[in-house]
Image 1 (cartoon, rainbow, N blue to C red):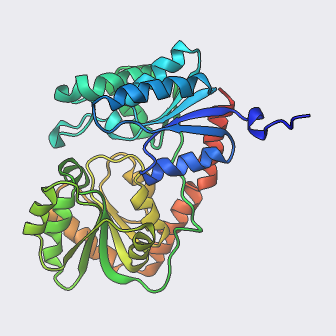
Image 2 (cartoon, one colour):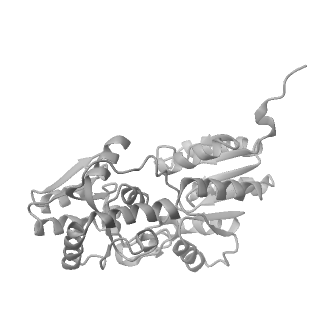
Image 3 (cartoon, rainbow, N blue to C red):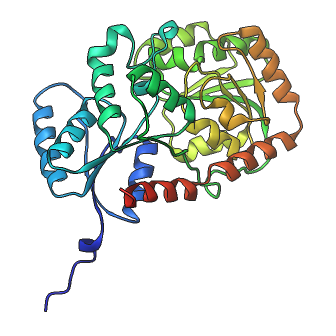
Length: 342
């Protein structure tokens, strides 16, 4: 008698997301612990690969119980359309850009000039998904406002972090750290220009900007940076961990952010946070750091000085906040519940 495959009893999930992104990969690995997961990578260029994607997506969803997609865009709009056609349900994880409309920095899917390309599919996704998962309640508010939907399908599921992995080691150094990919939209959104300008007020302190440089926009930052600013380019997970462990201060100077992974990881490594009060940034920082107005160079310099002078106990307080509020196990439990209660 043929033995029954253990995966036959499991919920089958069509996972749609770019696994080169660490936070997407983390959810994929989490789901694999509980369900039978088969993935489809979204195409990165608008060419014939989209036809192959749609065909692969249709076959995968047909064999699955539901689809699970990261980000609301054309890739997930096709997934939801096919799932509805096949009478399957879809879960979407909203990212940030797909929820936003911030004209002053030219950011967000719902900007007037980007609506047909980015906002239209996002609106369809948020309206028709069985469940939309958001890392911070500010994203839920923005989706309701910008997509003009009622929002009863939106569920708050914060990001989760492994405090046994992201942990401090050794003595802190006078290093001020920021992390993010170097593209023009990201530089504006994350306030990296302010970060670089502020470094000149602290000539004896090392400022480190970690992240890949994708376009020439980083050249402008380099040209305006003082000699104490280091641009690392891409680093491995292990190297990033070492920067978190060494730096005393972490800066999240963004105009828009969900629940920023790098900020929370840095806080788990006892970095003292300096950030703006937008979206999920104060959700993470709480009373464990210092706040600044977006783009305010002088105020940012003053806040960084306070953080550098702060006792080490504030870094421990920051670690405990993230450890208690956003454990990885909590996100795992909530996502599993969202799928099993479909």
